Length: 208
Image (cartoon, rainbow, N blue to C red; front, side):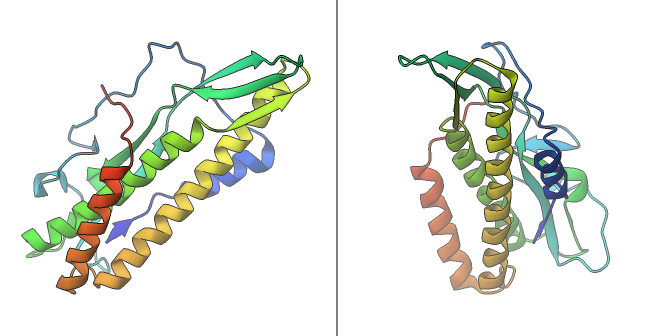
């Protein structure tokens, strides 16, 4: 089972108010690899990573993970016709697990349940990779190098981010539904094959 971050409302408010927030970094900036008591970037999980409290009403086991967009640089280039194009460079996009909101019921820490939760994290990683590619293909054009041009690009980025989160959530819900939270063994194995193939064919983003 996947527990969801409540981030979409925040993103909608950014787009609605125009209060977008791109952070301009130097080319040397990079996304750090994270693995401590509270959080981790994408990796092979063990039950030691599930540190949250046991909650009534949850399933046998659950993981809280999301796609992070920490920061990015905006590059504005002048075209041959005198217009300007803004694009994203060095985006800080990655999958992140919240260990403090991931856990299992007593007796639920089995190999099968761990494999099911790992696949939820695999899906988060897959959509993070997709978005890391997509964000660098987004552009905005205008007649001059201006703050409005940068803002137009940032609004497109936030909208693409929201759509990625929606697609990720829908994919995870379908996964839980079709596998019945790992109870359908044949379906679970098929999902493992399919998601492994998706990761294999999708270029990974860089972590340091």
